[in-house]
Length: 127
Image (cartoon, rainbow, N blue to C red):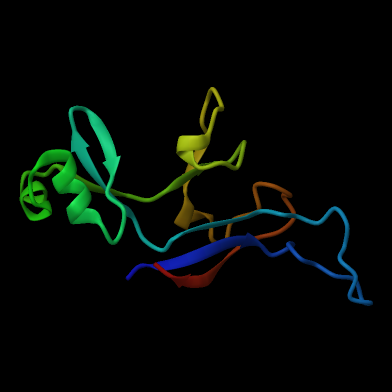
């Protein structure tokens, strides 16, 4: 089962010395899998094959077993991406020029939201 992660700015949830939340702090956090997603290539389109139903979804779209589709090179793996401008996932981004980055590459970089903090990856469960 794939691990789920939260990618979060280390400035989220900061508190002052009395334990009160600091206003204006960063709110950047997203959840994503730790590895790539599986996609089916069909008729020039990419279809997500969600875990744990990869085989069922592939079969409903093509009538073929997932193993056969892998042999036919009709299955690819891609990491989820977010736009660094609007901070939305690739499929939800409406920016004219998408400034995309693969989610796992966020770890350790400067926060794209507040530009003060650093993005950390925290295990958040299993799918």
